Length: 426
Image 1 (cartoon, rainbow, N blue to C red):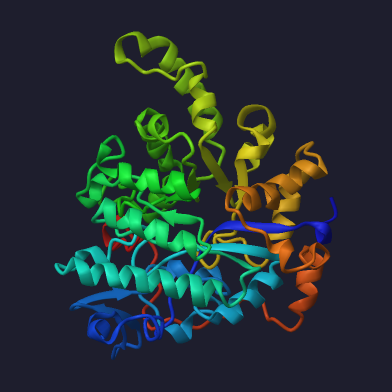
Image 2: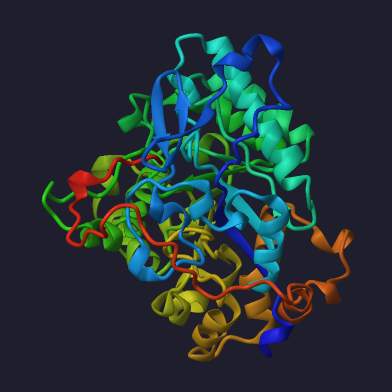
């Protein structure tokens, strides 16, 4: 396949919310409760919510910065690329990267929306959750509906309220919602509990994809407090295997077989061995554990219910056809995080595809058709297909500067940062 003929839809990117996001979506009664951006004396910008300071961590928004300036220090809006928080500029950055469509996970409220649940006034928490979703769907995605896939956050403290929110946003054209890959570290019932049945029922009824992103439980892979940050960075995506094991042995898919779960930012290289181990465990232990996948193999049961994605995964692509299944896999760019392949997603994808014997139709399935089907995203109804290719999009982004820009740090760049220094905001 020629690079300029590719069509790319990313199912895992991120938004850094702009300071004015709540201004048009909260009733007057609740305006004083809304998080506000405060510019501190040290030059950083933080969100203030009920006395809690929530910084924008550097690694969350380093697109366009040289790697030497990556780090975990708080940052400010004038240090990060405008495409992180400005929808118009984001579309230009997507076009410069040859990316047609993008699903954006939240930053401020956490991947699973847990921030608002910290309020004692749960009515106010619900209003803030609805306001966030309205901003995301109506403003961020509404700016260019042919370019964005809406993603709602849950009212994670209450399954019934979350179910109602799922039904509400579904009517607004949103077909995906975030959910923690493990609710237990958040002090909530596990995926094995029937507590969440109203949520799964609402997702089943509306065709809502459940997106479980790495770190959405706010639990990082910590082997030791003094382990270098590299340990967590290497292990975190693969840690989604724990969620996979929970899901396949939970009652969710037996009760609600229509529910699809996207394992977001988890990669695919670990999946073949997980399926092999799953089959071995089922054969060896089902007689006494009671595991039962009916007429399906354990691997078939799991794969029927998941959507996988990858940024860069040479091993997974070598095995995708025979050991995973082309129809289950999508791509991601992870803009503007540190793992992002911006602005060279087409080049990097094509290089990895070139090391396989994948056909052009299989590449089309991986790069956009699977995502369009699973997330009910139809950009071609708004934008002609020939204007959706890498070549066409990049032609529209002429003049967008993608060269790395050093901003300079207020803090001395620190090497050897340990896991104990990271304050997770997922």
